[in-house]
Amino acid sequence: VQLQASGGGVVQTGGSLRLSCAASGRVFGTFSMGWFRSPPGKDREFVAAIAWSDGSTYYTDSVKGRFTISKDGAKNTMYLQMNSLKPEDTAVYYCAHWHGSSRAPISNGGIGVPYWGKGTQVTVSS
Image 1: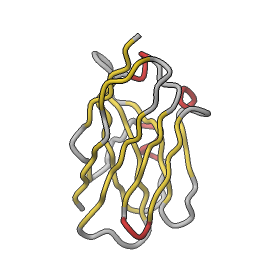
Image 2: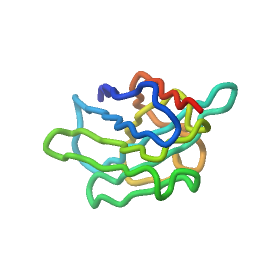
Image 3: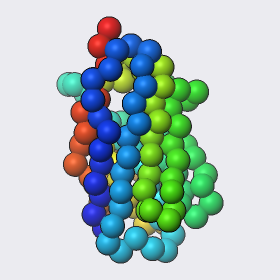
């Protein structure tokens, strides 16, 4: 599985950005996709995830109500709409793909996730 992420940039506090992650290769069966981020000087953390088969979504508490994860199954593409951005959202954002519907990556910062896209920088200025 190959993942191509795009959509990062620089935005002011309160602004919006939309990230995209296109998956290609052996994209079939039961799987999940998600977004993780690495803030400056901090460990990688979970942001949001979606189970591809039924569309169930999961968010870390700090982004609930501001970020929306979605998918386009026909395009094998995942999106992250980020609204009301805050300086603490500044990070390199990574998209990820893992087989099955396990929520383990959600709780462990993505340990064991086999497929990652290149990161895209999101910078929120105050």
